[in-house]
Image 1 (cartoon, helix red, strand yellow):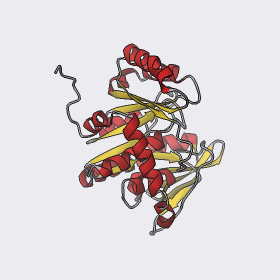
Image 2 (cartoon, rainbow, N blue to C red; image 1 turned 120 degrees about the vertical axis):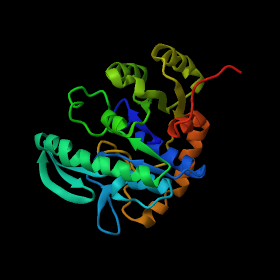
Image 3 (cartoon, rainbow, N blue to C red; image 1 turned 90 degrees about the vertical axis):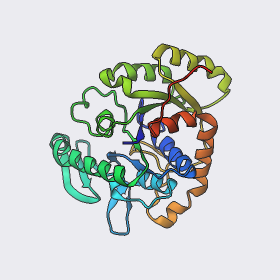
Image 4 (tube, rainbow, N blue to C red; image 1 turned 45 degrees about the horizontal axis):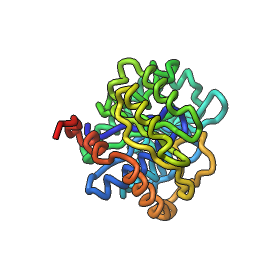
Length: 288
């Protein structure tokens, strides 16, 4: 299907932020784009008028894309109950109240992946493109056999991947290189790298961008500055300082923030290249 997946080198790398901005940018360009995250983990949810639950982050992204939030945008929501158990929300309704991690594996391989496939099928039929958000890092070797939120979903949807790394937390170059090394056969699916949350003089980072591109062979799509004065709900339960709207009226208040994020991405990233990736257009560089 036409679209792209945004994955990160870590949790809170800014995946939700990038997806939100791209949803508004593509909507501004007349593309009917749908946000999607197969599985999110948070105790905060958005309630639809029908009483169904989905992740707040995907509800906000839907609003950025000028859509009404629907549960197919986030078919699985995990609400942590204890250190080893979570409540499973499937297609907006409680499926299991206290599922432990071992039980979740069985769920993921049956009801979970089936719900994800149905959601992707619906999106493929009703939208021009999808922007998929991953969770945490795709390089968690111990989780790869059972995950249904990172590279397995990129394969299911057959979308290219853009990898996002958080410069602000430090170690972003090592995080990019290490993540790519641990993706093994999925490495070739990564078509671009974004350095996010950069503070300071961007000229001082240009050599790092060149080195990363030369060393990995993957195109660096840009460096996004740290945006301190725009506050939208983040991707997961680890993020702090985020607002959590629960109604359409509250979501409408983020419109100015969506435009600010979209404007920042338009200035910082190779949006034409990203758009070509999303629409499955040729990105091969040709001599003039």
